[in-house]
Image (cartoon, rainbow over all chains, first blue to last red; front, side):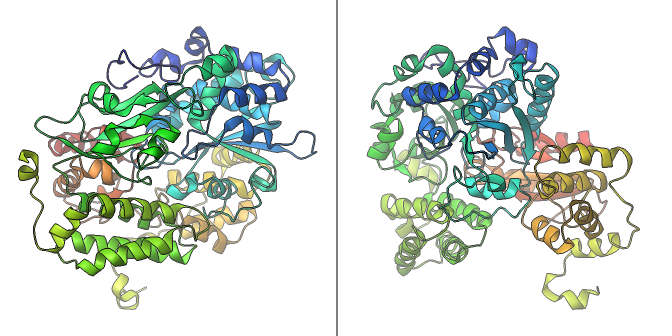
Length: 437
Length: 182
């Protein structure tokens, strides 16, 4: 709902309706707003029916990959005699993304409800919410809400008096971007270094503690409650473009823009109107230059591409990028692209777990070369070297952190080559001149 | 450890580590804290899974995670001290040496970077007298570091002071923020 600003009339607030509403954080307040009705309904249904409704709704993973949620849940085979686990990925660390933080600090009970529904649907009695260590405020509210929910018998060994067991535990991370990768998250939860695991085996076969596991993003789990209450058709109808992308999506907007914040729109919303109307357009006297629409690891869009984009999974791909996590980073004409990209590379170099050579060496060298170009000490050959390294970093490692570092570099050189060349040829970036032009 | 032996790695952080490690270590997991850990263990199917939470408790009680703390945790969770150290060194939030009373983390990743985070870092370094990143100020009050994405990019520049999260920090707010801490 445009939080921390007033909601915009063109938003559709399903998940973000109560952002900024302090009363919604408490159990009583949440119940007054219709909370835990979906869980009550869910616990009275057969797990397979829940999975089918979610499948039918078209809900896809909101963490970045966009995998169909119902299908993922259906991989968990009932009656295999093993304990199943649900992990909620609340390790939100993708630069530009801060939607899950708002969900957890304003509507913690919504996440407990989503976790309980998800756990029950996949035959799990335990759900772990893995929250990044830096999120002290969301952690405070989540722990408080979990305590309240246990005390009220909503979760626990006799959830809502149904005799079914659903435990929800909060687990605090300790500072590692890579733990947002699902297999690294499982390792971290087990008390290991957060190194991603080789797949297969996939988590649904052997996940956390070696048992069948499903990992879902915060936003995905929260969305399951209104879907159960209102039906798959209601959700499916929220679609402005491609029928493969349904429902509402939270977009967190940051960077050089009038009203940064978390917005909720129906899938397929025109990106141009989103940026200029909802987010208020560029800062005074500036123009937008580029957008990174799905967190730092997706390709950079030029404004020409961005303004022609319809905001859904397919729409962003059609216009040279990806929906990713919905973390929209807006860059204006005062920012030198090389500096922006070099800083992104530094982030990935810092966060590489160093397991794979391509990633450990690739992210470090990419950063060094980009920083030397930024400082006016680059050569034209450096651009070819960067592209060559990027190729070696793509599709060759255990997880996609390496690819994620290569993506903004390759798209940046392709789309803003003139800025790289100008720096190499000794021409400094002059933001004021750029604004006039 | 003498400064000559650590060569290029010598820094004020190592010096303070050296002093602190000679202070006698008292056990963390006694009484209520031990019961807190026992409660935590119930959440997981094995002891090892309580490692990250146990290390957080050590840091809360001692301000950092000394090697003796790693040994204590290893004994309780039936792990080797070497294994525990391997985990501690993977995660950036466990302090492996003492830090200032106020540990200040300024986000400087790209989204904050394009909104002026570098100037916020400079303001903190100047006003705390820490001077350099990662170095504790002479009065032992402040340690300032740059941190990768704090996940509050719409509130550039977010800053964490110990467990407190402060949004939308600009260089001119820095003196006020620090004044409230002292």
